[in-house]
Image 1 (cartoon, rainbow, N blue to C red):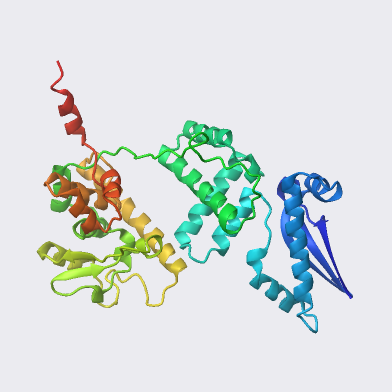
Image 2: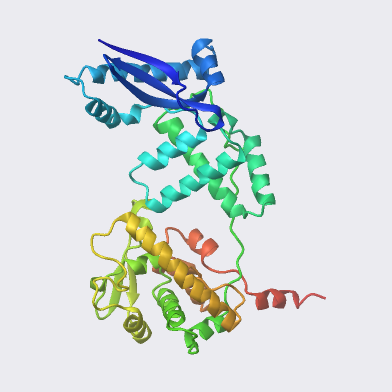
Length: 403
């Protein structure tokens, strides 16, 4: 005969006075603890001992009871009883597992169990979670009000974070609230959604940028005086990205020799594999003399990959680690080039994309066509993020006409 009880597991205290809320399963001499959520003793006493009558507490008790019942049902499917088999069957139905309403738990569940997320995106959500937890330890969904979001924004801006960075953290939080309100429906309907016209609106921040002038870009192209082979290689990689329709480094890293013929290079952007379901078009790059010379300098003919830094069958984790490490090394060399050429804006791999779009725009090419060449989803994205603002000389020249 088995007994199933919901209780607070006080055997091990967690941070901030929290303990695991569990379903304890007694089967003869066997004991199994199945975590449900994390609560303080005061919260447990309020919700379970005092049987608080507010809608949130009632809904949470109902979810916990539903989970306890599920444990009983699955227990009856495991004959004879086996702990590992029991836990495995429970894990297979984990989508029904109720979570606490701590933001940390919801964020963790989202980036851990959402199979469609790339490693880079998981890392971003983990970072956002830590930022909110550091701002207010133990924060729950009910703490997220328009006033909370304004305080968060003001706090981070005072600490020097850009408006775009703050907006990205809050956008991640909004996604979490939407998911657990509309998809997993863990958040009670009594929750007052903070994002609205009269509540809090996430600012659409388009960061101003000083882009390199045509003269500066030409100085990078013509550069011949390098301190080390590593420095020259970094410049060549940057120049390849610039001439390859302003490609991202991730796309070059996984580019294969089979992605090209004698006339053109054809590939799909890595970024659009999961972010876009429609209108996924290939990037087509004409092969010219300059691009061919760069391929000879940076290419590894002994590998199926152009840069030769990956092996076939690589995992997403391996790719991210290799990409992050290599980009760091290359950007370090590009920083040295920034000083050598006395550039007005730091040279980084990502700058190749901006410079490509801006060069075409300055030459009179339409933003629509630039958008197509870069594989962007909308003209607005191209214009706001890649077609650069005025350079320093243009800014001074604008005001020269004033009396």
